[in-house]
Length: 465
Image (cartoon, rainbow, N blue to C red):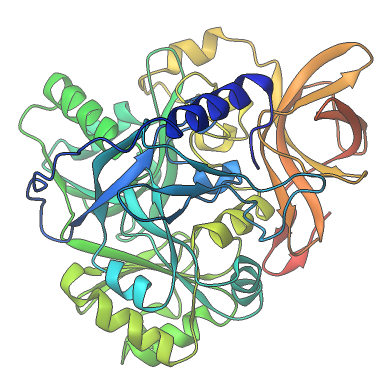
């Protein structure tokens, strides 16, 4: 939603005043540096936005669309609600600012031109040029809930960990216990913590062999994650290989019909993947097929050589799989009660207060990074669901009041639920709050009523609240 507080408005007014007196300054046209296989680059203009208004990598959760338009070296950024509808009582504002204009190199997946050929609305997402939607975020959301949709998630980074000390390294690196991984292809969701117990990132770990694990980390934190792992590797397991796999594309096919559509496209794959359980994966031909996802629906997340991604994407589309963008991905994961890094947790938050206690194993004598800090910190808050009872929209960082005259919590993720047709949210609230309670949310200086519920809100097409 547009930022309407006085501080932000002062920035907009200054920009417009400046624009009226000055034309855009010349900008360097130096070519971008070369990238590893599987990554293309495109020049993009971007407007600097106050960091506290928009955290990098969270466009979809912030409810902001940056639609690039304009000519003569000037870019127009149009702010809209991702649902395709304006917030009630709020206008959309065009902000054109040569003063804040700058060139930067934006990474593009191997499917970038394919998205554009499908008329996708593209946005800069954590430094990647990614599709926000292909015409209707709501339609894409419903196609995934009711049929099959596909997402380009190639901006996420796969890392191969190879060497005899791989398991010992991961036992210390992540909060969940990789000793649970004994079957080839089995996956484990975990967090990587700093010494203070904050979440550096959440990730999935696949066990391939005793000397080979595969990790998948978030796009916006990939560089930070890799640097952290390499530094810890040098301390814990010198000689261990940590190999970024930017030569691979990743496509998530999600929905009740998703697996059947994949079987139509990848001949012979049904026999190999039909009996995969949740959080299991297998290699088949050139594909790495995992029964995982970020939507609350069944389906596969598939890695394949980046050079083959366009052909595979088009084949899926030909059998009825709908392309879906970041907007639908966010509303689907919010309904499913799945955390978004940088929104529901970050390197300052305790995973035990972020709904991630099930990913932290404290009972064994394993001494992972951040364990001591977690043991010493009393848990005072919880992540819990909210459904808005009044008219309005729930957004991240809105204050939640659980008792009169006391500001006791905050929404971490919020938005309109296409399935429930209501505004929903995840919020970090005191442990004393429980499902069924009624709280108040401060929305534009108004107090709106919300009901506390256990999440997920929706799983496998069923409403659970």
